[in-house]
Length: 331
Ligand SMILES: [Zn+2]
Image 1 (cartoon, rainbow, N blue to C red):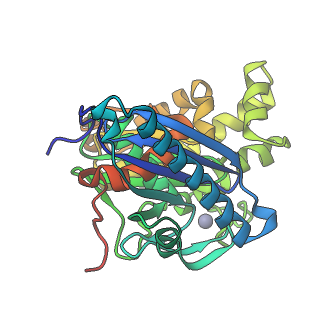
Image 2: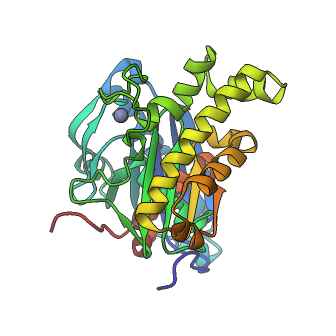
Image 3: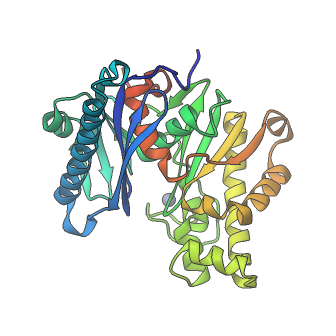
């Protein structure tokens, strides 16, 4: 099944919004993969769950207005004027029932059992798709990014937390409970005093290798600051990053052994320090992975879409259903 760009000028349009715990990132996306407009703002998390929902609605309205402006300005060009706005897609941090479009739980946004799809369907009278943010980023990388050449790959997002999306033979595997790919909660540090994870367990991969863990271990305010210090030659910062990268390599090694992917794609804020962590991740995977599984692996790559992966993937939920088909959901 061919996937990827459909080079049809004047094709369909969709809005994709990635609802991060820190930033809302919205894009107007064409079915040819063109990014036609963007909006970005801080998530008004402190103002409560309703305020976040309202901010997302406003952002979607602005992007839809841009889409209509594009159509109007192209009135003399039938191919552009015929562009059709076919829907909105949303990526949400936390488990999502993608079939119903319901956010099951999002500690980051303060949402629980929230029917996101119905809310936006009523607001805009357009089709709406909702999925988990990391799964959306995986679909974005599958459609237009580093995952394009592969039918089976794993996409990790390493930022405030760690998550993954699993593409199996061209389909995103969500799992019957919508929790497939929660690689951040693989137990990896078995010391009794291992760092506490946000999930309540100790020693999860996320507790030792996320941006949050890197900043905490280095006694700095962000992983970016640690990376900057490492690039200036700060030995302490380098040691913290290399240790986190080694843990990340162990988690990736477990995933490779389990799924036998052709590639692993690493995105998220921490992937911005790929020059520092990439070599350690690759070396750890080479040293620790069951050799027959390594033989099928074409590589471990940084994500190609950067911060846009989630919003592109959210738009692909409506624009490229072949890529985004709900798989592993309960019948
Ligand atoms: Zn955990």
